Image 1 (cartoon, rainbow, N blue to C red):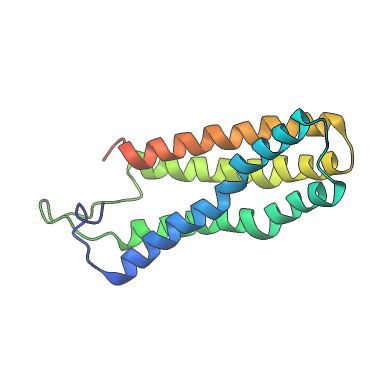
Image 2 (image 1 turned 90 degrees about the vertical axis):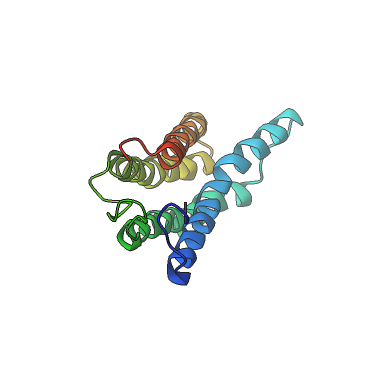
Length: 159
């Protein structure tokens, strides 16, 4: 990507690094916790209440802010993108379909995280079985939205 935008700029590369790093921090638990929960259930055990209660806290103070930071660093990358060596125009623009789509998906991810997943995790940690089922469903929404986001960023429709 850096070759496409003709950027050897250290600051751009730093923002790109932070974009990827914050995405890893934001989405790692979306893949780890379902596996931990499944393995725990297979053994006939339950996740201790202290651990289950910490999951929504971590989403609010670590993973959610990392998701916010991922989008902010993505915004900065669009703003900082250089002119193409071939066309002389900025490579990334806010009017491009993939950028607009990525913003829409990012807002949806934030809504699922803070509006659906965290409240359901809190209720599940308190013993609500219906909420525990919703945690799985909302986690699936996060997986699907992340897949859509990755497709937008890799294939960049409209570029």
